[in-house]
Length: 227
Image (cartoon, rainbow, N blue to C red):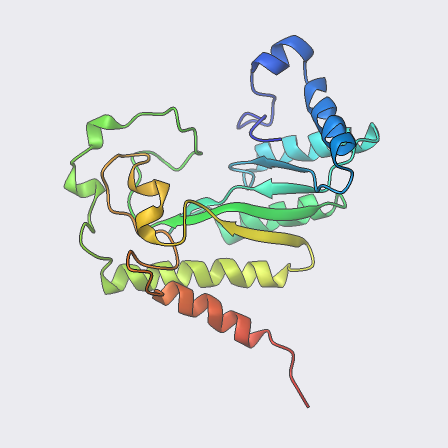
């Protein structure tokens, strides 16, 4: 199930909701479990680090569990920036969802290196910011990511993955979004078309970036010590 809640944790209006109310979610999970009893069933949404939306997901998961409906996890889309969300907010959500007895997945991870035309408030792709196309202030790195920005991106990814490792017992998986290298990312054309973004671990030539090196160093640090 994907993106069924508003930012305040209430249910989004949809054709399913208008006809069936919030029961459509329980029915969808039930039918999915019947079709494939071995499938992992997850509720997935963006901005699940926000307290109000987090509370809405907690209510939803509890409601499904009380009805005896199978739900295995919560998927946190992770379209984040260099500045936010805070590690504290992300961690609070991991703890809140894990306390329900379900696993947490990070399903759409990328970290924009560019300024956004709004205070980062979700990934509602129907929003349009055509007036910013061609504005050099919104596309400051058209050739390559400068050293200072590359270090900032590396620091951000390192901090994020340190948190993931801290709670690896609660996390099922981490999935990057929009390809493997920067040139494949959706953030080159959203929210502003025609920009050159640098949100992933590999550059446009598939060369590993400093962010990749930081993440891989964490993996080495967490290897079991051999006697």
